Length: 347
Image (cartoon, rainbow, N blue to C red):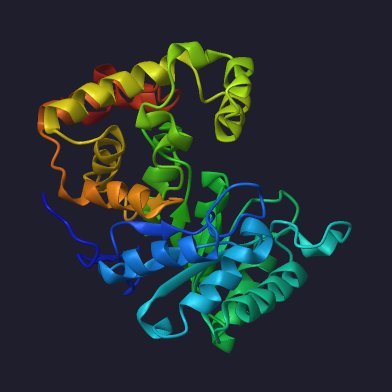
């Protein structure tokens, strides 16, 4: 397998063609104390587009809006050839409850703000960013459909939501003739595979293209952490802001480091980096449309793009799957058992 960024894939049950790796722009801007300054962000954007990449992911509040504003500047010469995806629901104005959440008011105001910041008349793809457990699904779907009919949005998707709510929304959209969801964004990688229980099978059945974020587990899968790093205090003493963040989230664990060790061995056999092997594992998964990759430097982006040239053999895939396997739980484990297959299959 050898891919290029212009080996385009269809996004869910739509006619939209996207690159097999999306460029994440949460690193565009340094408002959060890390990330890429304007000139470096421009280099990342240019490198990705010059290679044939067309799928760029952002959100209304990434780097306090700098991400959208920089993309608005960078995309002026080739806006029509790009697929710009942004998101709404995270709070835009502290103290204003209606500047957050999934409500129609939040949706409309957020989309208008994103259009201004991105300097464009339309969004190719809008994700509901985080489920709020408060807004009725009919309000969300009708609001999204209204904006599609107005031409402000072309396609809609969803992120960080329960599978049962997403499938319910898709059924309602189909029955009422509203714009269907075409994309699902979830955290998914070798150390976080719980999406395989319900979210990914649901996306396959319901026609949503999966665009995972954090495909390298916040850097854990790059092999940068050691067993000495199993305590947040050790990471903090080294001045690693991202490392302390990962430790606080519980991603720097014995299990995850063990998975990273297996990935490192596979990468060594292939003559590539752990990051490239980890991304290649996702690229060869037929249920995944386009992992969202992030970088702060052109060298990091170059390394990630090198995953397009990596071909994992069946043995490599089996070893990685075994090392990172999860318990699918009930009812999945029961339904997959030989006994249940025999009693329901009539054999």
